Length: 129
Image (cartoon, rainbow, N blue to C red; front, top):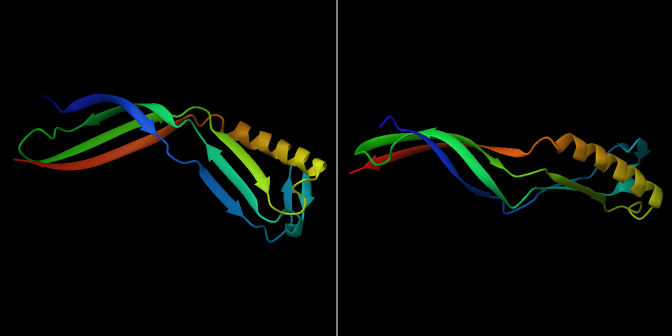
């Protein structure tokens, strides 16, 4: 009767995120500096599980007549994110560079490993007859 609710479901993540950047100045990767002409474009991807359980708390009742308001706050548990990095420049096949890039990638994955939930905020309006 109060309109408060606990809800659950599934969250679906259709795409990984991708970030591309072309440096204009020297860049430090894994403890070594590289010139923009060596790197070319740096491409990073962030992926999570495609499906994850959703848990939320909310308030509202769309079944009543007249205008209504709904509010939900929850999280989708998408698991540990996975980051990948690569470059398009002439240095991409250099084994020493790959070691430095792998070292950088390990640091990045350590930093994002604690972000295992995706926050969800939902606001809604309804009109019942």
